[in-house]
Amino acid sequence: MKADLVITNARLVDHSGEQRGAIAVSGGRIAAIGGNDAMPPAERTIDAGGRVVMPGVIDPHCHLGVNYDFDEDIRTETAGAARGGVTTILLFARSMEQKYVPYYWDRRERGEQGAVVDFGFHFGIQKAEHVSEIAEIAEQTGVQTFKCHMGYEVGNSIGIHSSPDSWVFAAMREAAKLPRGVVAVHCENTELVELLKPEMKATGRCDLAAYSESRPPFVEEEAIERMIHLAEITGCPLYVVHTTVAAGPTMAAAARVRGIDVWIETCPHYLTRTAYDADLGTTAKISPPLRDRTQLDGLWKGMLNGQISTLGTDHVPFKKNGGDIWSEKPGVVSFPWELPLMLHFGVHERGMSLQRLSELNSYNPAKRFGLHPKKGSLSVGGDADLVMIDLDEERVVEHPSGKGTCLYEGWKLKGWPVLTLSRGDVVYDAAQPDAEVVYGRGRCVTVPDAERYWD
Ligand SMILES: [Zn+2]
Image 1: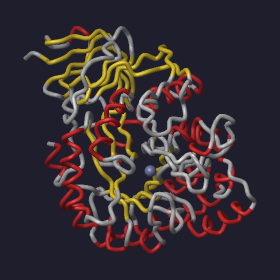
Image 2: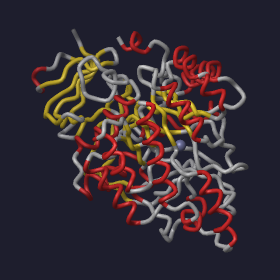
Image 3: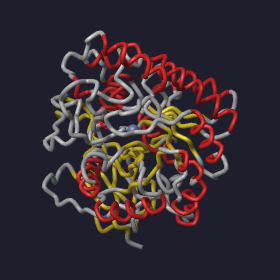
């Protein structure tokens, strides 16, 4: 048998360890892993020259089609993802008008017409009716993660409906019955936000830090604690999205010791930026907000000691209004830079192992959201979703499209993806910057009857 591709002389790294050798790809899947001499003959051979080859990044948290049209976002943003070594993205999608089952089929079809890499969905609980639809949605779409928002006051700039505790509790009760059910929660005490925001506004402050200080860490910490309690009562796995507070990982670790299934996700911006960075203005508004150096350092502790489970970018392209911090739309983009940021600030600056990075970026999200063993590790038979990394390459962050807010433009980072494979297809090659991007090859990974689908 002839393989489609063999990559030789690689440092093959995943969550379980590292070995030197080669990896063969056939029919979009990993066909063999072993010594350079043990590989089958191949149509094409790439010499990695000692560089790292890891499973592609699975980004479990992003939003597309919120500001720009979905059909446009799915093309431009998944092309950016491929450049960043990201091979699967999971969208937190929400719909008020359309029911989620028809919404899913519409988005899935449009996604498969435009996407460069694979994608899937989680759905937002935006009204009480959504809770009663959970069983039906799971059966007919395969989506088993449901997100409850908090901290968005009535009349917020992006039209999100915050969940009262009754929605969260009821959603957990329903999701707990599903084989892979998860409730994801944006943890911020909505009522405290509603009290504190007008107080801060009344001081006349309108800087980036004023927004952060109007929703202080305890607002998030209190909500995490409360959600852990509800997860314990319902037995539903809890996934805390975009955690900004250092206490989050410690609370989750303590809960896990008590047998509660709670995972903490954080984002690259909370690990690299603070609300007090002099070069940032109101367009750096993110929900929840950037914090300070103490929280940032505390989050890195959780990154290194295993208390944080996953990294999500919360990538969302917004046209910012550039005005008042209180009415500005929250959100930034980071698909192309998440991996370089983690290589630079995690691996190089803080000595994080590549194995740990692969656990955070690939294995854990695959496990949590039902994609493993098909994705998330280097396993024979699994999808050949791979990223080759040059640990020594230094490149300056550029954001020529200007679509969405990039917080890293002009930063020189060390460690970049140089080749990305999605199910065996080269979707990004740094050596061929002008190569044509193939749209519409990405496939939806949240599917009905997933267990059969993955066989
Ligand atoms: Zn988000």
